Length: 264
Image (cartoon, rainbow, N blue to C red):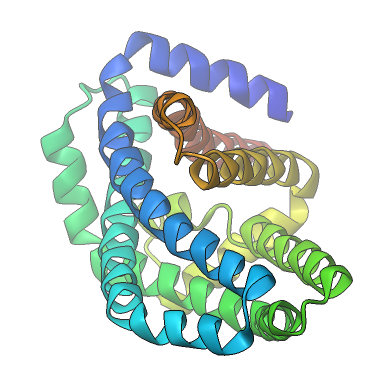
């Protein structure tokens, strides 16, 4: 199945079941709040770094430590909620293809039943991403302190590439963890194997998802003005719509891949 075919099938599924957008609207609102708070801190720190003495930037960073700690806790909550909500979709898509009634209650029960596999699998994938990204994060931090514009740009590009590669490798982790009876490392291995053998379609979906995230971050950074704040709110609404397509596309592509493999 080509990526465009999966997009069409996902659209048809959502057209018949628009209630599937509701869970992603919730998580989009949570992430929107987190992004606004995070970008407010980052923009202020960047201004201190480039426009003020280093001692002033260090003092500001120290003063913001409690705020950053709260943001970290909030981000963990958002990640857990997002992981749980995402794990509901494979069950709902599977029910659609089996012509069963789509039920949020059944999807929640299914997500709970596999949570001890899904959540650790996602966190292992996140840990791998962090390990891969850490050198570029340190480079970016050093470049910011040193006011090295070239270093900042290069480190950001490499960080984005690391995120893209990780997203491609683990793109199918939700349907694999939910619809196959595998353990944590079995889930990770199967996700990698399927992504590798279907690289073109999955890389297109991953790039689409990454571009959307970058646009949302940009809008969050300029949301201090009323007109941009309104634009940001609209972008979160659009993000929820597109994010729902993405997470529905995920199991749709998985099922198509499995169907082809069975036919072979």
